[in-house]
Amino acid sequence: MTAHYDALETREQAAREADLFSRLPGVLRSAMSAPAYADRLKGVDPAAVTSRAALAGLPVLRKSELPALHKASMPFGGLVAAAPGSFARLFTSPGPIFEPEGRQTDPWRGARALFAAGFRPDDIVLNTFSYHLTPGGFIFDASARALGCAVIPAGPGNTEQQFELIEAYRPVGYSGTPDFLKILLDAAASSGRDISSIKRALVSGAAFPPSLQAEIKARGIEAYQAFGTADLGLIAFETSARDGMVVNEDLIMEIVKPGTGDAVTPGDVGEIVVTSLDPHHPWIRLALGDLTAGLPGTSPCGRTNMRIKGWMGRADQTTKVKGMFVRPEQIAEIGARHSLLARLRLVITRKGHSDIMTLKAECLRPSRELAADIEASLRAVTKLGGKVELVMPDTLPNDGKIISDER
Image 1: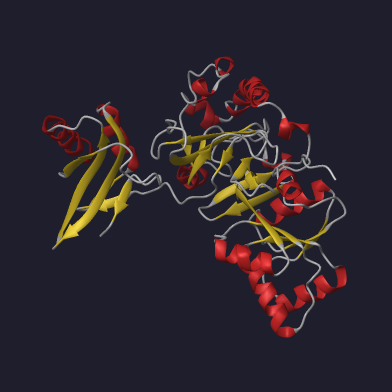
Image 2: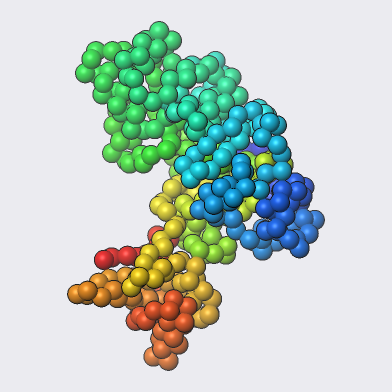
């Protein structure tokens, strides 16, 4: 049994980067044939965007912008030049955000994640993600079939009928949320149904805490996690190394300071930004609003692509102080004005009936003059008064939190 899906997974990272960035200019040209990207990338020469530094100079497209774009220009917000009829399936997610499925094999890039979780051709997979209007069920269905598996399109709920299917077809694999897997296991145990054929699982879409991981494993199932979105499909996945998640092939991932497009210091928590290389439906620097941190080195499983810790929370920390919005990008602007500062964290508290802002800033050489200057910047940028507290480097938590609302 081979350990890897194909040779792409174990190539030298330099070769991967060269491949990705040699293809990027063509993808950018395709993207810019759509009106919204043509406007956003006006003046960009695609031929010059052949490195991470050049890519970082392009504007970030925030997922939070998509509902307004899609409402203004249906169905795809002017971000897709291809006609809806050129796709295989057409979905919607809350917002609304409209998502098309390509006609190519494995359009959601999920076969690698299933393979890494131990799924193999001719396995039977019980897929319990929803098949109704949203793409979740089809993401895992198409991925499993691309791997050569047979799929039971079960969807969520209706446990009695699921038991009938499991006992008849004896699936070896499960895809769905970890919560529903536990529901199935508990219901089967209490009703005497046999679902012991299920030996491995690829779970996503909900938290999978260590306690639940241990419980699922104790019940004879090796479960692996995957991180994905309805826009991009499977972005990163766990492997047999159980050491973070490996980023999928054909994607360029950046981790940036929340509210900006600027890369974090290696190892720091930041927001995930993804560029995809599907010329029919490209995404250019899509900021997902999800936090993670990169891991050093390559995975012990032999896959050489970038690794991340997994999902670590949400990047959108916008809050209201005294009736006014305060955003992470404003705090980032304050940091840009004062080069001596490292991590920043705006703490919002309440005393009596008043909101209080305290900007904590890491600084190697603190001074009263610097604190006063930063306080002035805080007022200028946010239009609100607040205190400044200078702390030593590596004092603030490395959790990606820029604004901490503690009221």
